[in-house]
Length: 245
Image (cartoon, rainbow, N blue to C red):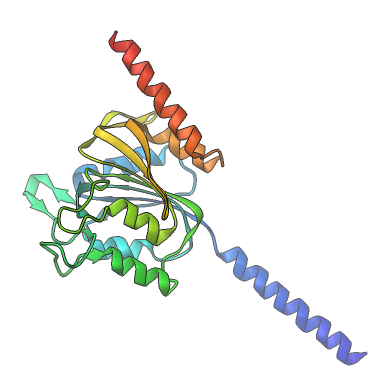
């Protein structure tokens, strides 16, 4: 009987410890910015989020990679400048760019600095369990041109990011800029299209406008779906067309 009682007590302790460990693991909503000129968007998008983790002063890919480490990420929104091979920051007043030290598609493309990080670095961090994304997570990239093929390799930055993380990634093909942004709305336009990249699947064209707040809120309320996004972007485009007429 004493042995049985001891076994029950040990089992209770193990279950309690497992529950505490599970309770300590929290899914994260992460908002980041690379470049002082886009940092204000972290505050604006933060008006629509609860308990988000904000990071404004990220100037290098290594800093960004370090920020991704930790508890599993459910939603990651990132603002920066973009290129067909990288995301990077700027300080316009000082005429400083972190182009070479950004978050880069591959170590084989031009201008890769010592403080940069690559998508291969991210893959390694995930293999080691230091960076984690939950199943069905969403990444929104507020950066130019990260949805087009790299001129040297043909690899699309956003698609590769989706394949590595298992997340849906929304990004723009060309110049991405705000149509309206304040405490109530954040709507971005693209010279071409925003695209939703899905892990190892064909991408979806979302149109030239992206309602960032609505997309984010739909996702967090578990209403995020391909059909909802397409319907919303189509209706938004039709609304703007009717206003023009």
